Image 1 (spheres, rainbow, N blue to C red):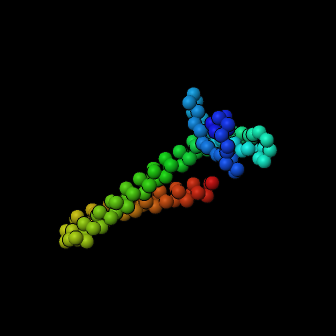
Image 2: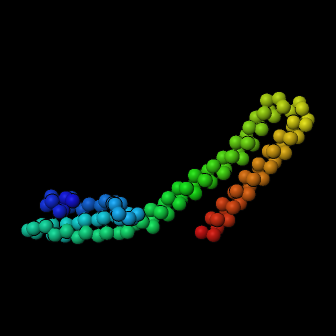
Image 3: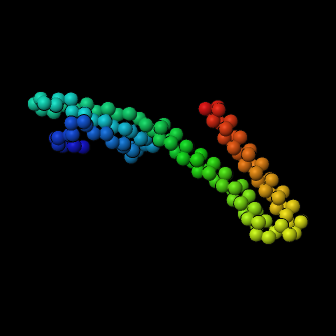
Length: 124
């Protein structure tokens, strides 16, 4: 917009990210004055379609949010049952056994999630 209005651009140019109004597109726009020190202004405008990159960033954000939730669930369960046992539930053998079975199950779930993440990391 500055170049079109005839305003002076910074010597290092301008970089902006633009989303299209008609399509689900993201563009990275670079505008550089290529006539510095000369009469008149000439600008080089470079457009890079970064739509795919933006979609990949969203997939990554969604993945991290999902993994965080999946990791937090068994950890919260393990912590809760451990605290209950430490607070005195150890006196009741049946309750203790039941809680330890839940802790064992949730720690196995946590190990499976971690193994899946490590496998995914190796595949990358």
